[in-house]
Every structure is written in structure tokens, then in C-alpha cells.
Length: 246
Ligand code: MG
Ligand code: MG
Image (cartoon, rainbow, N blue to C red; front, side, top):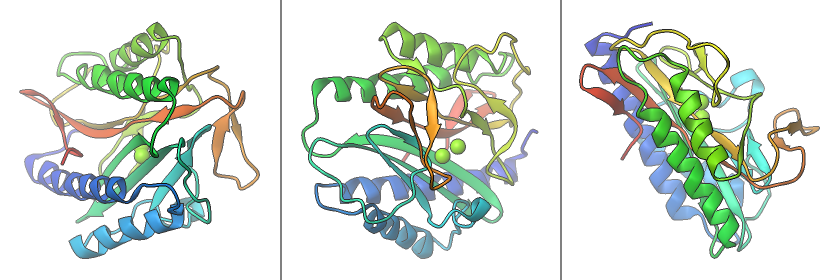
């Protein structure tokens, strides 16, 4: 699906709201804060910007952000969990403006964290940017996943297979999917106006995942740490445009 200039303008605005959710929640992350309090910070941004949530009510999801600490990969439900010094926390945020969606995630340290955790976050963010750099017209979509995988595996980490990125527009999750690995085929040819959410989930240990009994929280099967970074990006004539940067 290719978006026209008016549609891209709305997605740019949705992206700015998501970027503000990132900035505000980052400022609120500290030892002792609960993940429910972080959700309230994000809700306040949506309210003040007149945006709505694409997470709240999604298949019954009860919050406007996902909060996934430590070995949790994605889709953690905000609640009573209190962040502790030494945790890493992944926060995924989304917003809808005039019917158009933005979606982006980051992982950050809570206070001081071990060097290995810091390196996992750095590599995962770098793998996202390596993937974003492949979002150029005429390229094939799955070059994104190959680039992500190359960066992650060169560092000795693994990429999650069961959860992937996606096209985005008038729905949060549109086709095609954007795997974070080379799936064996080059995928569709990229054209200007296509918009994708690229979102590497990188594990310090093996790539296997496990779904917890709450039906949402996805953790690493081996209990190793996991990091998640995501942006919403348009393919333009001038290269990739990242909508979810501040
Ligand atoms: Mg997301
Ligand atoms: Mg996404």
C-alpha cells in the first residue's frame, strides 16, 4: 500500500505523538516507579494531543503502552511491577491521529545496569538503524531483516522469529510483515509512500520465546535478557523518513 502526501502528513503527526510518549515515559523511568504509572504518563500525552490509542482494546489489551522488563520480549501489561535498579525495560507506544497510526518502541536501563545489558540494548538499536537504512525505493523488503540479523548475530545475540515488524497505515498491523531475519525470499520491491514499522527483538541467549499465562507477555524461553527497538518509517524518493523521532 502506498500512501499519498496527505496520508503521510497524518502519519507524521501520529509519529510525533508517539515520539512524545517516548520522551515523557523515558523521563519517568526510575527505580520504584510502577509500569502502571508509566502507562498513565503515556495516556496523558495522548489526551493532550487529541490522539487515541491503537493499543488500548486491541484484542482486549488493557493499556496504551506495553511494558516488558528484562527477559520479557514484548507485550507486557502495565501493572503493579515496580522497576528496580539494574532492570532493563522495553516500552512500546502507539497513537492514532485522524485515523492514521504510529508505533515505536525503545529499551532503556533503570539506573546502572551490567555491561552485557547495555551492550544488548546498543546492538539492538544499531540493528534497527541498519534495517531502516534498507528502506529505499527499488530495494527488496527482506533486505531489512537480513541487515537486522547480521548486526544482531555478529554481536553473538539472536533475533526473535515468532514476532515481526509490519506495514502500518490505517491499521497498526498491515501486510506485509517485516521479519527481523532473512526469510529465504527477497520480498516485495519497495516504492515511495510505503510505510513500515521495523522492530527488532534481540535476545542475549537463544531466539525461542514463551507466552505467559496472562495470554500477552512474551518472554525468552531460556530466561535471557531481551531488547526491543522500533520506529515507523516511510520510504520516500529521498530515502527513509523516520516518523517517530522527536
Ligand atoms: Mg510497537
Ligand atoms: Mg509494531
